[in-house]
Length: 427
Image (cartoon, rainbow, N blue to C red):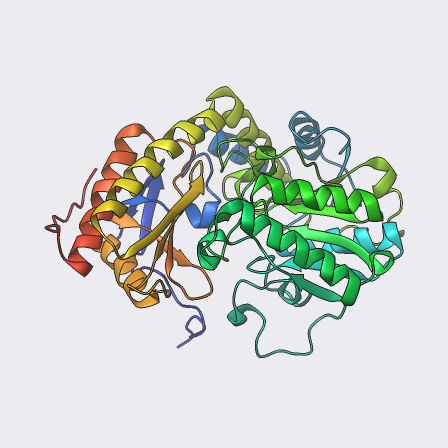
């Protein structure tokens, strides 16, 4: 009998029957508050009626219209909608299917635009699992081990991970910028460096917001040396951090921006945006793909961006994120095993550490499993697996955040003691 690959490990035992909004309804008869959203994908919640309607209507018109063969209306509409929210100057877009594809397309574009070979990435970044994307991923060896050789021309610099170093943010930023300057002196000369590639908030690397001063330091160096600055907004974009783009907490703007995940509420589509000047330097035939810009996914993307705007979901992400972070900090005060709480908007990380400050992946894993028992779905991340990430849908309500906090605290208490566990299974 055929089965799924044993290398595919489920984070929870849940089998979904159906889902709506912030809730997943399992075949086991239980209701689960979903703080995973398909790893930050179902931005408007599960099966938002406007997204469902748009996809259904498009399926009845045309499903696959390969966009370098024939053009279709949803992609033109999506491009227009993106133009309303993209940073100034990024007026040219092309589409792929996944985040990894978009990352690889962005570095291809940067190399062609500059005529330079090297890419600088930052420790803890996650950019995908395909060969080039994995070559630039430093969130953990599991993403790049076992299929060497990897792509050449990638150099890693320090990320300002203040909690790990035991410093304040300013000291961590100063150190990381100093290390970047040293890298440019010793490993990849500026005139050999095509791009800096960074997430505005690390995803799999530990849910770490990138300090604004670091982003601005990258912009300054990119301008000085003619280096392309690429912001990987695959996970942080589309309102996830309480601003439409994660980089908007700084004054820095990208030369190339990548988006995916939350842009279409679960339909697979990604976009790469740059200036027309930069995009015109791409070689003929270097952009495209069979499934890129799929018509149904594009229609879902148009509906998603409409819902985000009409329902004020970026602002809801900010407000509900403040509520979530405040509640998590209160829980941290009751459980010393929680070493750090950080995040922006509805992208919150809880780092578990031992008494000596070392990563405690075992406790994080146990708590993550215990949240399932409480009717709350969560995920872990970080190189040591010691960070639990909470990623509610942008439509999450104040009541659902309160319920999630109660369930999370009960799960922590069930694992480490101190708070009675009271399992909740229904909304």
